[in-house]
Image 1 (tube, rainbow, N blue to C red):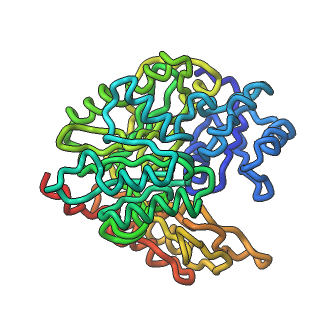
Image 2: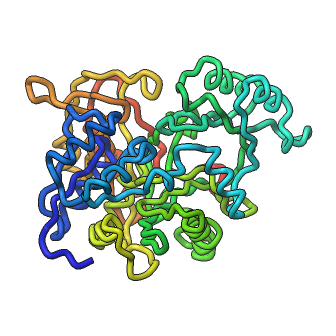
Image 3: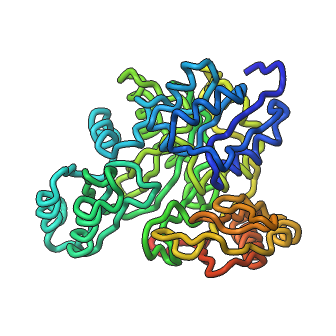
Length: 432
C-alpha cells in the first residue's frame, strides 16, 4: 500500500495483545501517532466507542477484543468513513460455536465430531453416553459455551461427573450468562495444539508464524482453562515439517477464506483458527477472528518486516499483492503470562508491582503491560486477570525461555501466578 504520510492509528483494547501491537507499530515509519484506549472508555458500549472515534478521528482503527468485532464495530466505523482492521459482523464467526461447526460442515473443513444442545436434559443425557466413545475407550469429551467467554467457557472432561458439572455450570447456573445457554459437546482430540494467525484481505493472506499456546492455569496442562498462560513462536513441532504446514494451509486456512467469501461474508482482518494436529491430520478446534492473546506477544517480536502496510491495505479495503508468509528472524520468542491472585475466576486488583525495570534492562525482555494501572502515587498495581506478558527472545527455545523466566524472576506482586513450563516439551508429543 502506498502511504503518503505517517498515519494516526487507534488501537482498541487494553491488554497485552494491544500492547504488543503498539510495540510493533511504533517501529514502522508509516505510523505517526498511536492512540491508546483510555481507561475511561467502556469497550462494551459500541455507541460510546463510535462516538470516541468520531471525536478523535484517527486515520485507521485496529480492533483487539473479539466482543467488539462480534458486536459489529467494523460495520459501524465503516459507515462513518474511517478505515478499520477487522471482519464485519457477518464474518465474525467467533461469536457462535454453532455457526462455526455448521460452516465447517458445509465446506468440508476437518473438525472434531460435535453435537449442539439448547436443552440441559438433552445435553446431560448425551454426555452420559457419547455416540463416538467406544465403551472400551477412556471417557473424554469437551463441553463448550456457544458464545464468547474470553477463552474460559471450555471444559475438558475426563469423567461423566465433570461433564455434567460443566453442562450445569453453563446451562443451569448460567455462570457465563447468555453465552452458555446453548452448548457444544465435542470429542476430545489427542495431538498437538497449533495457533495459526493470518492477515486476510478477503482472498489473499499474509501468514504469521505458527505458535504454541498454553491454555491451562498450572504446569503440565492442569487446572482450569484461561485466556492463555504463555506462548512460543515459531511452533517447535511445525518448524521442520513444511508438509504439515502446507496441509494446514490447504485443508483449513484456504478453504475457510474461500468458504466465507462464497457465502457472501468475505473475511478481512486477522483470521486465527486454533487447531489440533492429530494422527488423522489437522482439525479446527475453534475459529477466532482477531489477533490471539498471548500468541501475538510471541509472534510479533520475531517478525522482521513492517506489517503495517498489509494491515493498512486490508483496513482500506484493498488487496494484498499475493498470499505469502511473513518474514521473520531465525530466533524464538517465549512468552510467560503473569496473572493476579484468583485468576481466572476471581482476579484480585490493587497489588503493588515491583521489578519491571530490572526485568527489561538486565535480561532484555519485552514486558507487555496487560491488566495493570497506576495508583495515586504513580506506582504500578494489578488491575485485571493477566497482569503482564513477559517475552524473552533467543537463538533457540532454551535461551529464549531462560531470558523470559529470568525476567519473570525479577518481577514481584502478591500471590502472582505463572507457569514454569512454558517452552518445555509436552510429554504427550515429546517423541513424535
